[in-house]
Image (cartoon, rainbow, N blue to C red; front, side, top):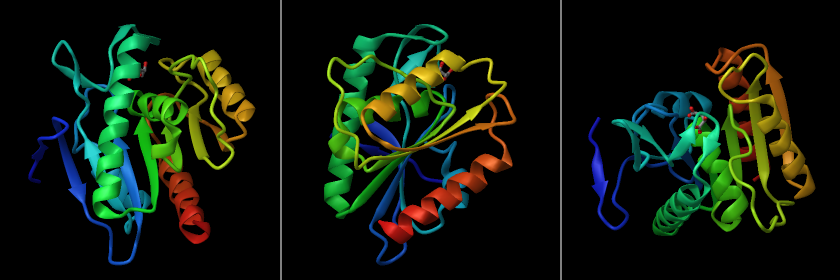
Length: 212
Ligand code: MLT
C-alpha cells in the first residue's frame, strides 16, 4: 500500500475513497505501536462502503507510534492530549470538507479510541460519532458539551488489564451526563480484539448507515 504525506498537517496517512454515493467517512485511529495501515483491514470488514482516513499518530514513545504522550500507562499528559486532539480535529475537518463527507465516525482502538473520545469531548463539531474499542475517559474537560446528537459504541474487555474499569465507568458517566446516544458492552475478553468486536461494530455501523 502506498503511504502519502499530507503536507498541510504533517500526517502520514492512508485514504480510501467511499463507494460512489456513500457520504460517510471512517477515521481509523490505531493503538500504541500501530500505524496508518494497522486498522485498514478491520475497517473494511466493519464497513466495506464508507471512505477511510487512517492517519499515523504523531507522538513517539521510544520509537513507538502513539497519538499523544503519557506519563505512564493509563496516566495521560492532558496538555499534550489537548494539543494533539486539536491538531487531529483540524485534519479531520479538512478532509471532511475537501471530500464533502456528511457523516464522520472515528473508529479507534486503545490509544486511538482515547484520542477519538478526547476529540468528541473537546471538538465535538468534527464528529458524528465514535466507535471506541477498549477506550476510557482520556481527559477531564472543563466544560461538558451537548452530546445529544452524538452516537457512541463503546466495546470494553471485561478482563482488560490495560484499560482500568474505573476509567471506563468514568467515561460512561460523562457520556451519559452529556446525553450521548451510547451503547456500551463488556465483552468476554481482555485488551485484544475478538470477532465479536467486528460483528458488533459492523451492525452498529450498518444501523448508522440506514438511519444516517
Ligand atoms: C493509552 O495509552 O491510550 C492507553 O493506556 C492504551 C494504550 O496503551 O494505548
